Image (cartoon, rainbow, N blue to C red; front, side):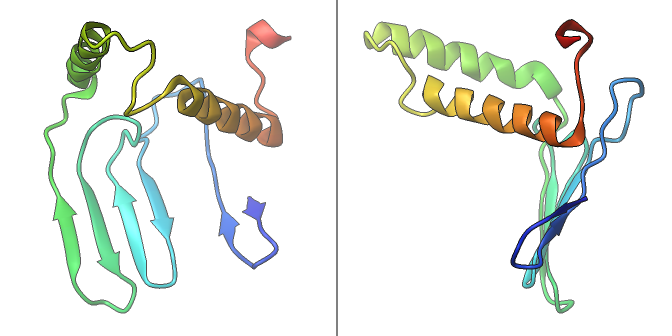
Length: 116
């Protein structure tokens, strides 16, 4: 359980030993975003108003790693343009995301075998 000074809370469950559903929910005062599992892969999601109002649904085929095609195509485009980094997702942002994931692992005490 994560807590912030403004009263907000977060809950994270993780395991390396089981295949879990992998969905995600982000709930706020005005709306709730429900991401279909696996949250880290392309897929559908629902955005629903907190007061029971309108809900918006986005459907996308579950193709998991098929989307890596677009990454390879963008990489080829960058090379063709003479770029050493992507203007859409620069290496600095990728590293920042990895640092955030490492901090989450540190806070929850998750340690990879290779780190022992």
